[in-house]
Length: 308
Ligand code: SAM
Image 1 (cartoon, helix red, strand yellow):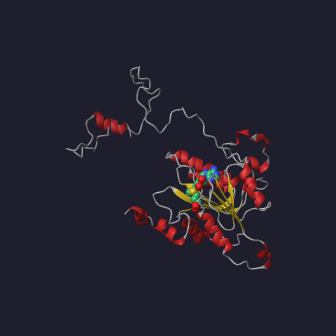
Image 2 (tube, protein in one colour):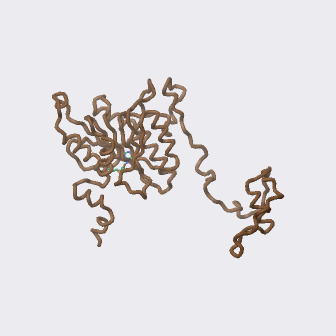
Image 3 (spheres, helix red, strand yellow):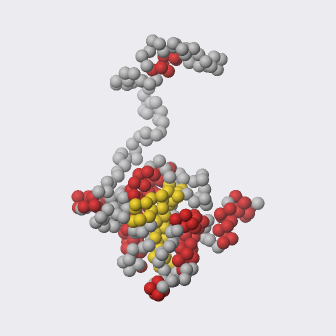
């Protein structure tokens, strides 16, 4: 037991150690590449949210392991930039930037490294520190991804949380990419809501200027939307309304919110005229509901006096 128990439980954890990957996540990128041939012709790559570095390892092995074919390619060594909030142990051929991917300054550093040229691929396995509140986690994750999208353009596999609002994220990504596929590598546990949005064919609205002031990002309160012109105005900002102290419509509260007062039923202002539960009310009122002793109460004709 002890040290070997995780090996027994998780095949990818064990394989990662055996094959020298820093994390089992390496298999997710490798499996995404098997499906989408992500690295064909790639010379400039960005790994966002890279620590501890297994995706950077994959990039390094895939891009640097290849022999350049022609002289033009030979001149240009592949460039790989890895960004994370946390420090990461060095990797051959990988430039590290310790920073926040949602910050303009970080994007500028990456662009500087590529001497103004766009990256060929951006991979992002970013995951916020999960709160356990699915809606919040999904939202923060989506914000991370939209930040990725604002300044870097090429095809990208991006980690997403498949929560209830995932279609909103897809439609936002579809503004920038003609193909967006949701992929779940086998190495990603079924029990996890994690999946990857593989975005291909970068085709932003014509005239769109990539910038971190994308109104899809909630931190852009300082942006004057009226200043945005042409296609930059097409993007509809999304705002969640109501502050955190507002009641949560998914929660159950006690009948009497003020414990010093007695609960008093208030009838609806306008009761429904013909509600769908009318039938059930009739059955209950006339003691016709099925019971354990009498599972099949007479139904025929029971509603003849109801206009259903
Ligand atoms: N792909 C990595 C690998 O293969 O080793 C694992 C990435 S880990 C699942 C998620 C990383 O996202 C963490 O290291 C975390 O520090 C990073 N992260 C979360 N929010 C970030 C942000 N705003 N900027 C940069 N990195 C961030």
